[in-house]
Length: 73
Image (cartoon, rainbow, N blue to C red):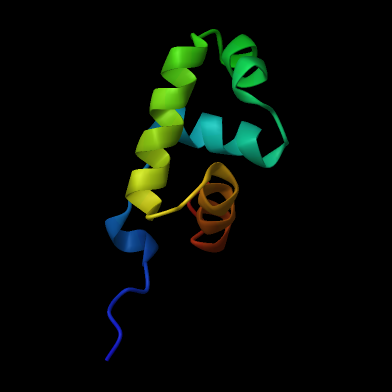
C-alpha cells in the first residue's frame, strides 16, 4: 500500500507561507513577492524552501500546484 499521498490534514502552512504561495501562483518572482509583502528576497527564498519541504515538492511550481490540489489556500 502506498502511503506517500499527502493529505492537507497534516500539512500546515503559516499565514506568510500562504501569502507567498498565492503570489507564486500569480506568477510573481522572488523580487516581486518581496516587494509585494515588504520582506527581503532572502526571506522569500526561505519561505519557498520551507513550503517546498512541507509539501515535498521538487520546485516552486510543484509546490504551488500541490498547495492548490491540497486546498491549503
